Image (spheres, rainbow, N blue to C red):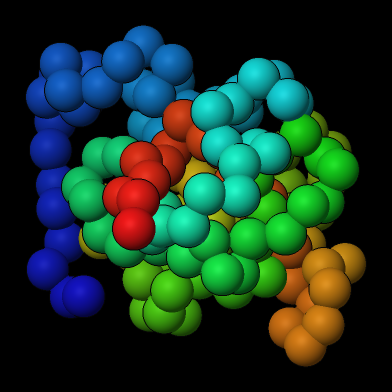
Length: 131
Ligand SMILES: [Zn+2]
């Protein structure tokens, strides 16, 4: 996935709901337990709500109790990118869509094995394709 998608803020604002725009383009966070997917076990592929890139699979989804959809790994490492985030006086690792730079959430090192990763992702940044 090498072709970057770049759109103006105006275009994103037009294509997304206000909540999707706030989270993906302005690095927002949805309130815990309010998102569409946090407790869903429906099988499918979770795609980027902005550009449709496949990001996470329901096979890697687990119940973290945090109120956000949580995954042990992305569909492919190259489909997401990470960046150091020191906002809010915390040292965290931000997770972004590699294709369109949408803010997805954060990744932590306290997930279940074997990856021990916990990708903590906003429902509003995802669109699930059921199978
Ligand atoms: Zn994207």
